[in-house]
Length: 251
Image (tube, rainbow, N blue to C red; front, top):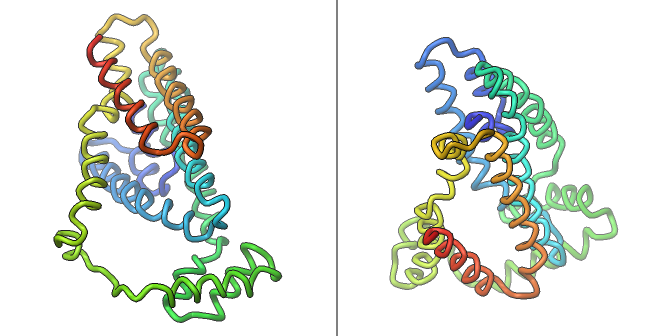
């Protein structure tokens, strides 16, 4: 079930590799490909969404991305329910995940490139074509004006990787890195990926069903955050959620 969770919407090469694996080496190759796919998509998908989204709905679309990630995890957990009766069901799960992988690849094949990236590369005509495809012909002039204004309004040189460790950016980098690091160290991945084993060790009768409830809670929490983030602010929600995590560890 863990493999099904991680590979629900990733490139289909590792799905095929893992579903047909007959030895540990083949399975490791599949997991390696899965890690590469997850790393690439995790970095590029939010950036792509932010660059093609209109300003007025950019935050909402970014939230929808996270919401559907949680829905995908929930779907994988539900798909793992037959494992209780058929331990070999995980191969079928890998096979099923090939379908959304293919749909994802086909969808990106017909999706336009980021107009902002094209503009930054000096590909003006291609940027205009991408804007026309995304927003319609009537929006081309307006969006191109915004891109030009944003480019002219910034006199800052492009930063490189070494600049992230400079004194100028250390506060921003430290806050961002600490948020992600502490979130992972809190054990959320262990809860999601190994919940079945944890519930089984705790003597829960239907450990797989209990894991599905974890996925449902994940979706529910994301929906609450999506509806409140623009009203309550980001900081207050983070404080509330982290405080709730602390209380749960004290039980």
